[in-house]
Length: 292
Ligand SMILES: Nc1nc2c(ncn2[C@@H]2O[C@H](COP(=O)(O)OP(=O)(O)OP(=O)(O)O)[C@@H](O)[C@H]2O)c(=O)[nH]1
Ligand code: SF4
Ligand code: SF4
Image (cartoon, rainbow, N blue to C red; front, side):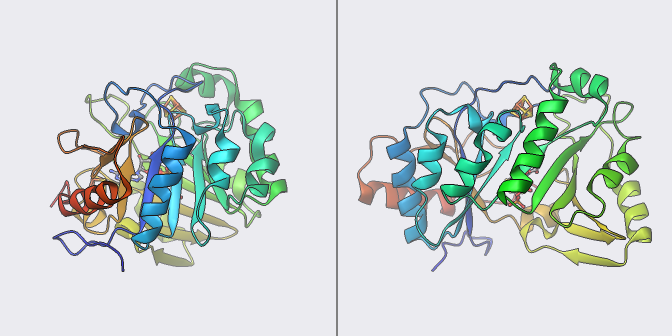
């Protein structure tokens, strides 16, 4: 039986940040909402968290960061995912070519890869590094290894990459294993590059053959001719929060009931199995939609 919060939202998936470290410096990075992270969880601590998650019926885990592939024990971590639980990862793709085959062999189902521009100079401007070629090789390696479907995550930045959407569509078009995911920038610092995605969604809707509403966050998925596009609009979106079914774990071992809150973290380090289970129940009970 899945745990439910008092807003009737079941927790069906868990997101574990494996490290706050990253080999890029994106201009908009929210670091999964972590503040001053301390010592990273060990592989055994992660395995124990996953066992408890499985006990509460959670059947899906997403590994995030920072950059999760910076963990030297990443393949071991993936191997420790309990049977029956699907694992995936959100990565910047730089080390993906190196790890794709091993991740698949360890049981990982699929990956999301962040690519904010397919123009090398713009990619460098956003991420601080000249790594686009490596990332595209990583995507190809993940396709070859069968880590699919692969979502290409693009954070839309006004005046920087917002004119590239058709280029991205051309990149994924015809490959059923690639999905484009357009993400609204989390505009915490009143960033001049923030843009709402409403107009973009309207134009996708007009061009779509089918529109699917996913259960998670009630996100819309637009099926265009030969290309699938998912849109993530988390800001001031009560519908998004109403259908939020995730519980997060920070890289230093705290249950995090909401990405946008730092005041209700629950430390789960050094706890017995029974205490850990009780803290899971407590964390789910404190969950509430950020935007109501
Ligand atoms: N506010 C908010 N934003 C989220 C949440 N989950 C994901 N996001 C945003 O969506 C972006 C993409 O998330 P990913 O890590 O690729 O995973 P996903 O697409 O949510 O998950 P899958 O569909 O399982 O692959 C993140 O960078 C966040 O900005 C959430 O629970 N709350
Ligand atoms: S790749 Fe992800 S974690 Fe790394 S800096 Fe960019 S947004 Fe942040
Ligand atoms: S802001 Fe919080 S409640 Fe809303 S979708 Fe994100 S994690 Fe869930």
